[in-house]
Amino acid sequence: MNIKYSISFPEPHTHYAEVEMHISDIEVKELNLKMAVWSPGSYLIREFQKNIDFVESRAKNQESKRLDKIDKNTWNVNLHNENEITIHYKTYCFEESVRTNFVDEAHALINGAPTFLFVDGFENNAVDVEIIPFQNWKNISTSLQQKDNYKWLRTAANINELIDSPIEIGNHFSYFFEAANVSHELAIYGESNCNIEKLIADLKAIIEVETDIFGSHPCKEYVFIIHNTEKSFGGLEHLNSSVNHIIRWSYGEKNYQRPISLLAHEYFHLWNVKRIRPFELSSFNYNEENYTKLLWFFEGVTSYYDDYICYRAGVTKQDDFLDIVAQNINTVFNTPGIETQSLAEASFDTWLKYYRQNENSINSQISYYTKGSIVAMLLDFIILDATDGERSIDDVMHLLYQKYVAKPEVGFTEKEIQETFETIANQSLQTFFDDFIYGIERINIETYFEKIGIYLKNNTVENNIYLGLETQYRERKLVITKLEKGFGAYIGGLNVEDEIIAIDNFRVTEDFKKIYEHKTVAETIDVLVSRKGILKSIKIELTNDKKVNYKLEKMENSSEKQQKLLKKWLLLT
Figure (cartoon, rainbow, N blue to C red):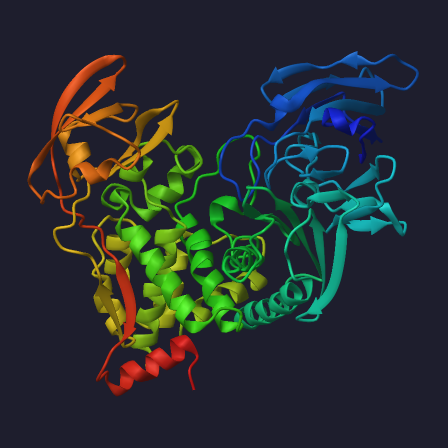
């Protein structure tokens, strides 16, 4: 069976992409055409088929006819002895994100999952894709290889590669450079304050560090697709490329860490998740959730490395890196959900919870990105300590990649990931994994930093009042938007969506804390609220701000071993 797609944009201002799928040399009597309901790397059922108005087929010398669905993402084609057929459909593309399609008169971002129907049972067939650009669009950037030396014609070895290869089309700017003996393209759409020369120099340094960790590079070519946006931020990794949204004015010195860390993060995924991947994702099921308890490793370890690699590459200063580590620790330990959800549970339930957060998520969830990065760092310290600085988490990643290279078709189980850490550390880590990855035991984090000669100083102010609520002004009303369990507002019975009218009989303003800031912990205030139009007076006990505020400081009078391990971690001479 031969399959060729063509994508055109005859009216891009309507935000539609038109897709034709020409199928020939058919040797079966009927076909089922499917669309992926989620995109690898973004673990939520997104029902991409909702953007298709209808699908029609046309056999040779016959009129087009609409196809019937047999379920939410499957269209049936009865061939009537035809061995060649053309499928036509339009998909609406107006969601500005790294995982979806966006089309307007200026450019198009085409992601595979929300674009291409595929033939069920023939996912391993090679496919061709022809792009028919709109009017004056001159450029195309994608990791899909050219066919017949024609830039608008691309080919993929199978549906997985097609879905994993985003395409940017328009008049964006492309910059080319070499790093780690691999050709790279930086495809940038949108104005910004980016210093291209600095960005390329920093990316080169980051790429060399990452490649050195794993020992070799998996790509011949790589494409960074960057959209400079007004407020959208994030990235999505692919087999030989990434799509990144960066706020256009965030490349200045003050905010530069965030975009460069994002690019380092998505690039690290070339190895960690695109090659070293969980067993459950060794082959994708595009019809439903693909559950794994290992996202703490694949996203958490990558989150540990992103800022760490920027530091190791000389992009981030040491003090700034240590501040980032402290911020991450504070974020994790100040999230009430750390007492409810384990890292393994957060990984498994990402399909339900991570991308669907609500006002109570802070109390019931923990991020497998941020807590995962802290756990990865502590495992690094354990290995450094156990091996007298001879080994680190780098050796874990290197060994896993060598195992992947030996058997690329097989993913890793939870047991294999743990055993690899234990092999490098040369000790059992069962208690650590049970308590901090599969359990919700509180981490005595100070003891782990002591191993490498760092003192965690907690700058929390005693007897500092904190109610544990967030508010927002809406139509001149002060409305509660979030409550943290364990603090006065939550304990006393205030609700999200309550309108705060007065405190201790004083009318509130946006700066309502000044009404009670002279009081002390354990005193009470009377809060008058409107709840669904009914006035209620609620007595709230003022609670202490018990949030941690750690700062990293090098220990005085540290031992020779602590000094050695600190030098190893921070690459000090």
